[in-house]
Image (tube, rainbow, N blue to C red; front, top):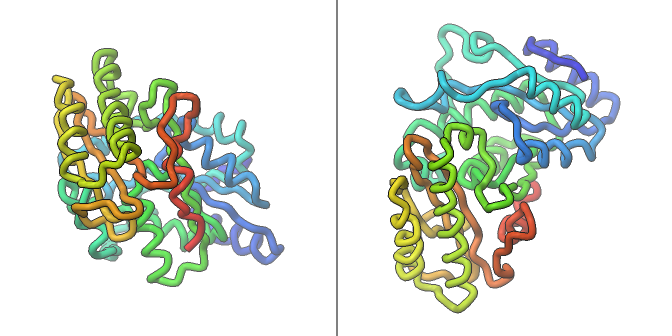
Length: 303
């Protein structure tokens, strides 16, 4: 495994690798790796060359968010990367990614308006900018993302198509703890009581899926019951709970074929997100798998 910090060195490596006819798979991360990241790396290892970036991107954090306190453990991350047989870890410095005078950002309109875009208005501008930069530096054939950040996934897919990035975008299923909590680096912020309280999100998703499987299609009806489940937990504060069109991410009133249930909830001071796809093709949720059945149905493979 090789660690590259210099942008030009990374570009030169990728140019050489592609000239050899090898396929580069890329997994961008902010580090503090967990089993969700490992699932992305395992997918990437199927290809000739696996590159993972570790970069906590300051432009996607708001002024009062947790950039400075975001969990970091490079030694552990590198150990995991080695175990997962990563070929290259790209770990640039902030000053190199955002040099003095940096003024260029990417805005993916409409898709960034709803859900997390409502409470984090500059977030996706920062996400799109850093992913575009990483695509230009790493020059992958394939980029792999987790679908827990469904809105982010949709925005990156749209950006890649609109800006003609010659990259296939692969979405991988949400990976959950045994009790259902979606894996996230921010889960480490939770104390014991908050960790127990966080399961209200999974219970709410289970409630929605069971209602849908029994014939509920009115989103107001489903959202009312989902909200009840979360509000029963005193430590919770709802940021949003919405059911949206799976392509446009706009709110809908009636589910026709499939729809996205998206949730953002504060447990104490920690903001957690989760989602599921409500679809006639989906079987009821179970606790026997770390992947949700809905995630397997999304079909986000390639732009």
